[in-house]
Length: 144
Image (cartoon, rainbow, N blue to C red; front, side, top):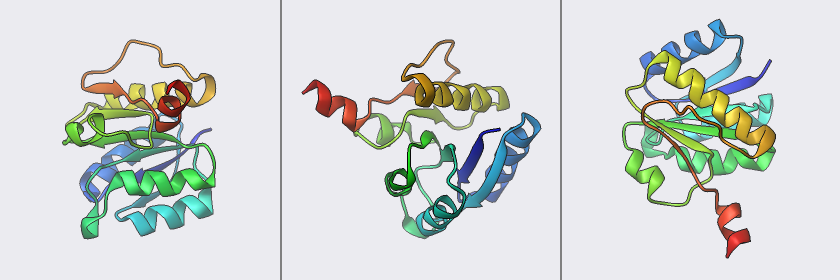
């Protein structure tokens, strides 16, 4: 069973995501609203995957949370945000991005693709609506 951390400041969205994931057999190890909460939960639970919003409570950024969470080991990161241009235009720590609003099936498929990226290094279609695979900074450095 894969462990998932949800980093989302909108508690209605976070609760919905948790319900969807638990129903499909994921273990949700916590919901964080801020970068500090995400890092604390990540340190304690060592999740396999994270669903991360870009804009968090207290003005924090999900990209910052993802970068700090990466220090605890390989973490599959799916950004779920209404502001995908911030993610797709800048190199960030993370594997993929899913545009909000998303359907339950899109979240589940997006997270499965991220789990596959962590396991095999490859993303296999079909991709859900509003989904993009991100190029990691380490890949870009290796190709440079």
